[in-house]
Length: 360
Image (cartoon, rainbow, N blue to C red):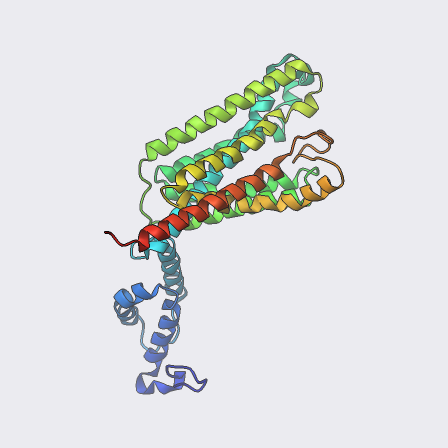
């Protein structure tokens, strides 16, 4: 017992080989981050290798060694070979959180680019954008067209196994989102925080879920085909609604976001339906979609306050639909999260029953 009353020895209790003993103790403290089963299987081998490579008299692990052990612990907790079944499941949840988030934000941003592009070729939009160079190809419109490519590019890179590129783009999108919300004075605080939190969740999931030791995704072609089909549906709907709206009105400022209003309920609805359908097989997808949607609940309290005041406000629309029954994105997010939470709970219950059932 050491002087502090805990198990083990103090640093002065190692005798002539005190330096090596202290170094070993410090290695073991770092290795405590590793799963217990992995330590039992590989711990002594790792300690021996680390001590054999240490110079005589060294008392502290190198920064690189400590960082390597911490990184290994993180990988084992999220799906690296050698981890537990729960760790593998956690890694799969993170992977799907990242992929679903990148695809959802790509679709959400693509609708604005589609709306503006259609507006340019409509009879009202042609007049409104009469000075094409100075009015159309400005910062917001350029971002509407370029930003989705970064999201889709990160998605494709991760699916195809280009993990380093996918992780770089997945983390870099936080900067794009920050630039978007900070340069626009029309954003309110809750909306900014919600979107930035979503971007941070996606970046964290991409960084942790697609480390170099994780198993590659199965059927990458199917992933890309489904993503392309979903993108086509959302883009066609957005373009059609925008074209109809611009040809029926002379108020392009208000209707430039018509496609986003359509995509607003569309993407959460698709997520809820998909999560429910996949819950029968596994809780992986419901869990991933639920985690991705949690930051969106940050916009719900403000919507409730506005509703109590007798108003109906849509995200990014202000009072355009005040007094109408159009519920807005906060309601879509809340309903989607409730549905996904129920699907996740049901799926976990089914999984637990299957794991504890005794064959007849």
